[in-house]
Length: 230
Ligand SMILES: Cc1cc2nc3c(=O)[nH]c(=O)nc-3n(C[C@H](O)[C@H](O)[C@H](O)COP(=O)(O)O)c2cc1C
Image (cartoon, rainbow, N blue to C red; front, side):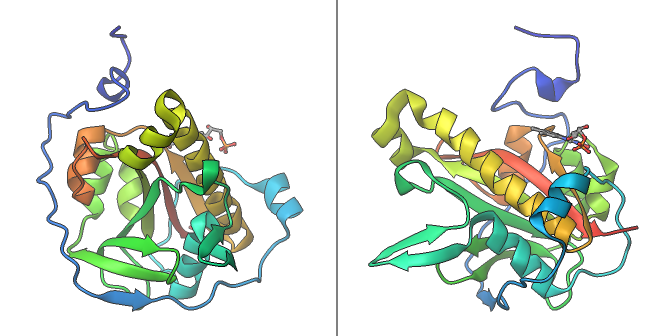
């Protein structure tokens, strides 16, 4: 069914915008060890009471520790039982289908580019070094504030393993898990005095190209932008 709304609403997946964003080549180019997450900040109650989606970001660079805390809150490891890593957010059958990709624009000690958060090691894997701020905003239905964020988190799902375990319920679980992770990240951002906004208005194919994934195997699900309060 087609509606009268903006283009990105017409399909839930695999829609291509008119502005083709070249596919990013993902190369493992090294790792950045993240500092431990910070336990400072407003209480959970205060964050729940006051949080709002905020789309205005100052040009001030975000400290790496705050970025580390956001990643950890989204899907970091909080307990090891035998060989299993359990995390801050729940996952159906501990299948963990989500990948956390980062477009870093303006963070102290981290070059602008594309990264992947690896929860088990609490490191960022560097995949591409380039300024992706404008392309990110374009892929996300031209929402200009996104280009001014210090960092944009993009959750993508690896479909194969969760689908073979849960068949038709796989996507339900993927969406639910993305909600868990994004809300964790938004609440911790509030507690750290940062601005943050969830983002669902984007062109799937363009975002897949942006982060260099093959959409038949891994698909973008959700995103959020973060920065210092303006
Ligand atoms: C699934 C989802 C997708 C969203 N996508 C966008 C978006 O693309 N751009 C945007 O500016 N806000 C987006 N938002 C934020 C909503 O506009 C916002 O949550 C809503 O207006 C309520 O305001 P509040 O979050 O401050 O309570 C999204 C929120 C959700 C839950």
